[in-house]
Amino acid sequence: MCGGLTAYLESKNFSNVNDLTGIVLPLIGTHAELSRQPMRAQVHSSDCLHCGKCVKSCRDGANQALTLSDSGMPIVDANRCDGCSLCTKVCPVGVMSLVSV
Image (tube, rainbow, N blue to C red):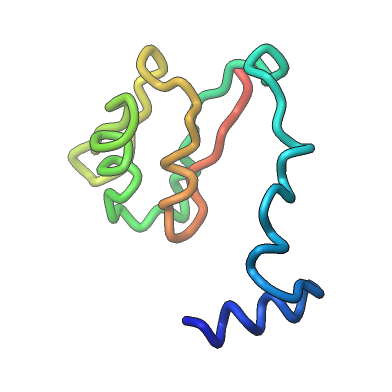
């Protein structure tokens, strides 16, 4: 792990890990500055592996807005989904996306 960190730091021209301290502070905004565009999850079914990772992540870490159909296809409950994007992060083949509502 140390070797990987050292290689990363060198590739980014940092001399040590302390050089990273505070680097993202200029990018942090206030809550009022956040985008308020409503989003919802969408399933692109043709490539879905029916693994259920999206449903598990939504159940355990989000709003329980996804369920599985009898065929194993994720179903989005538009009334519960708040567009958190957790399902898009865990999908191994990228069939989950967010769309504007």
